Length: 136
Image 1 (tube, rainbow, N blue to C red):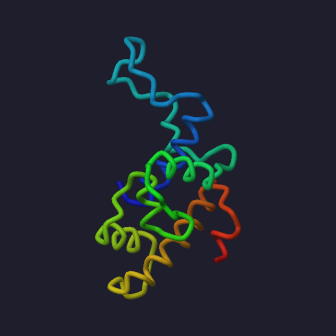
Image 2: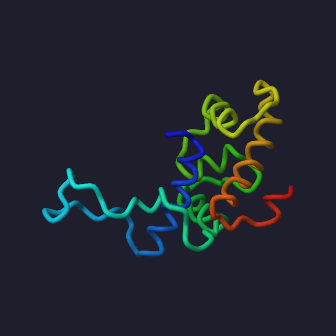
Image 3: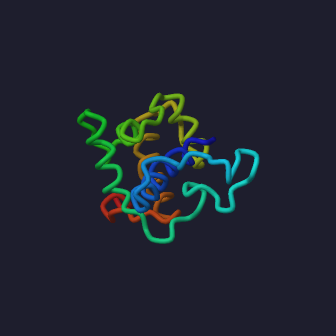
């Protein structure tokens, strides 16, 4: 799985679970054994039917982390809040996935670009992202 999909799944999957009241997928039963494909794809693979409040979900995730995270400006803190690898190697892979054409050894510039691009991509995929995070 690529890193942006992990970000998207962490946010949109959490929103889908919250809207249905389910904390996790229901256990497989004899009626739907593991070898039978599900009729409906998992929530994280579908586009959300309503905009997902990205800020609210990530605020909750950051609060649960027990760390002081400034995810609204830091790609590292955003990834930490979502429980995703925030290492430099992971961020370089994310930058490659999202088409960063700058110098990835300039991590400060790359990180600023990544944060903005991730917010844009979340908005393009059905996320409700505050304007301040899209146009900073």
